[in-house]
Amino acid sequence: MQERIQEIKEQLQSKVSTVTTLNELNDLRVEFLGKKGSITELSNYMREIPNEEKKEFGSLLNTIKNEANDLLNAKKEELELEELQKKLNDETIDVTLPGTKLTVGGTHPLTKVIDEIEEIFVSMGYDVVEGPEIEQDLYNFEKLNLPKGHPARDAQDSFYITDEMLLRSQTSPVQARTMDANLEKTPIRIICPGKVYRRDDDDATHSHQFTQIEGLVVDKNISLADLKGTLEILAKRLFGEDREIRFRPSFFPFTEPSIEVDVSCFKCGGVGCPICKDTGWIEILGSGMVHPNVLKGCGYDPEKYTGFAFGIGPERVAMLKYGITDIRNFYTNDVRFLQDFNRVEGGE
Ligand code: DAH
Image (cartoon, rainbow, N blue to C red; front, side, top):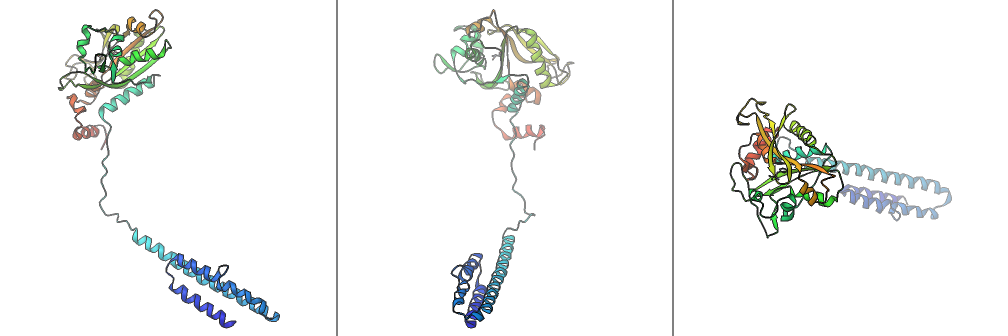
């Protein structure tokens, strides 16, 4: 028996010394100490051992089990340490190597202006809505009090797709769509940012595609004073707390009265400079009280309801705010322009 035990011990020692992985070591543990392992099976001899020797044999068995465990555990620690060392060597990071430069994008100046204006109106309880860019003549013109043949249609030389469909020339059709969908529900308080299209020749101040933000409020007892107060808040938040606004009479078919709104020059404060062309005032948007024909045509009784509307040109606002002199810069996607702009704005 002693020899058998010695033999097993030697076998284990020699096998352990050749093991190189934790998996192999685990296999060895099973081979010797598993349910059918050679050390475990030694206890089968217990039956054949005379009673007076059983105690001694038992303690011998325990000893060899403990020794085997110690041997395997020591090897396990050794292999784990080796593995860790290998990992550390393989995964060394050379912190002195030059890094990969990440190019960070910036927000387009137009997007900044649109976001800013949206935020101002959302804080006053407006919803931001959208309308289709391919629009029906019905919404783009007719429901806005511009019947076929109306001379004011010429001012918005449009891209027609069929006799009745066109690329919208303004965001105003969203006014009509919103009223149509609301069926005399009030209040309506919306703004609608989006792209519009006109058959203009592109130059420093014209683009065949540009953006507008439409605004519409409809409720009982809405007055010109509400319009003025609202636009004053817009002007101050957009161009600075000291700004004042003034109204000038104008004409739009869908508003009566129609008003053009100027803001006191944010550059010179009103004394006169190149930005305000020495007038002290800068025109920022068109607006007015919703024409009764528009209300009626969209299902709102003009005897009960009134409203105001306005249309802002984000390009113009961005050009004023950021001193951009050519509208084409917004659309030619020249990264140098956009980078320049983002540097000015505290970007890279
Ligand atoms: N849609 C007009 C345009 O493109 C701008 C405008 C003026 C919109 C007055 C309005 C408004 O809602 O009340 O020239």
